[in-house]
Length: 247
Image (cartoon, rainbow, N blue to C red):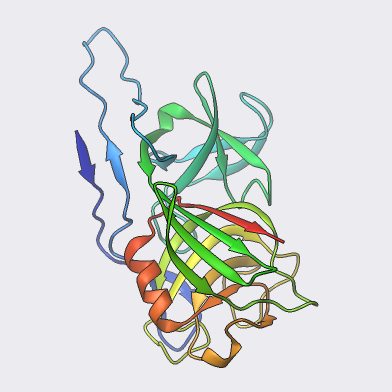
């Protein structure tokens, strides 16, 4: 059975504008529930069939490792620092281990977690950002459905390239602020702290009320979209969505 994950709004302990940022009420993820197992057999998480990218929802706090069964990399809680459910794009599977994209592993690296500590689902969406074209393409089931012109990092604070994923869907409560109405936080990390952003050096795709900056290399590393585009993204893009940023 496939059930839509619905979660009550959570007030995150991060303030970006004069209003508190809060995690979006709906993660947008659908998860497969494993069939019942006989009492003598331990339950195993099922891998949902069908198309789309595999995403792991962390249901128990666990340890992320540098390799399957290898040295400890970090402790992985069930919630992100912004208060969202911990949903991770799965790029590899090795026996009982999942290779996942996470800010804890670092840019363009994966960390390994036990499959037994997760519930698995799939997302059909994908985001592709071309820095050269200053263009964000939104794909659903491999087909482009939206194209947005975006602002990117300035030369002294470039937007990092690589393979990342959406970690949080955030509402700012202040569309006139520097982050507009809507934020899709990514697993990507910048080598520098981002001015006015309490998320440290984490990169995001976020809206901006300064429409004149769209299409320009002016940000502190984040990808900026218009307020209308930000609202659309927040309404459609689920946690764990793969995000590929290319030069």
